[in-house]
Image 1 (cartoon, rainbow, N blue to C red):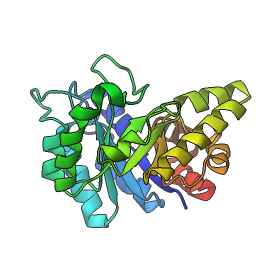
Image 2: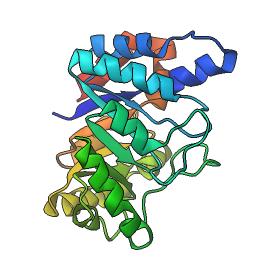
Image 3: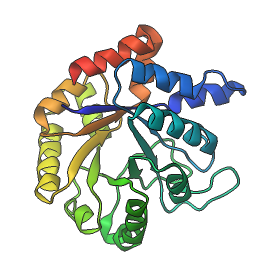
Image 4: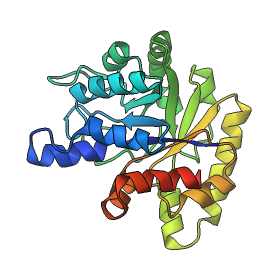
Length: 247
């Protein structure tokens, strides 16, 4: 079975738009876990546009108490600044089960591409080693068309997370056949190198089943934007249960 990790960034976006503490990120994460989600994902950014460092600590406490996976995403190269200690210090202090490294810059609205290992590989290697000393499983965000996916294993990573935005776009356009073949090949190449395969970005109840039927042995999907959007109409409990049913 593929595990569902719910990304609660969008709850923090709504809270931050008004100020204060409502809606409460921990309460929303608790509702997701109560509905059957297997874990919680956050992607704190240096500009604090949604999840903040203090949320990371609070959600770490929750997930450790519940005995479920906590997945922290972020750019390991982003320097610390006021209110953001940096990805590795956050992981050192909270010890998430998984750290997912993503090459996003401050100006990006959302993560939209994976690592170029020929450019970033040697910079990643010591950071991956440090995260593993903190007890984190390490996953690297990659494009399905990256010919060097196997390099993630050589750098010390445990998994890759396939960036599924192009698949979701093709599915919405009505024909994802080519994309599904590309992603299935990427998963097999990663698995042949000893890597586990995660997936995430723009996955939804509309497109998730087709993806999982075509792409072999996906261990985990991280879903936030679509899930929170669907929950506006269906309710959070029913939406999470809908994903669990699909999985």
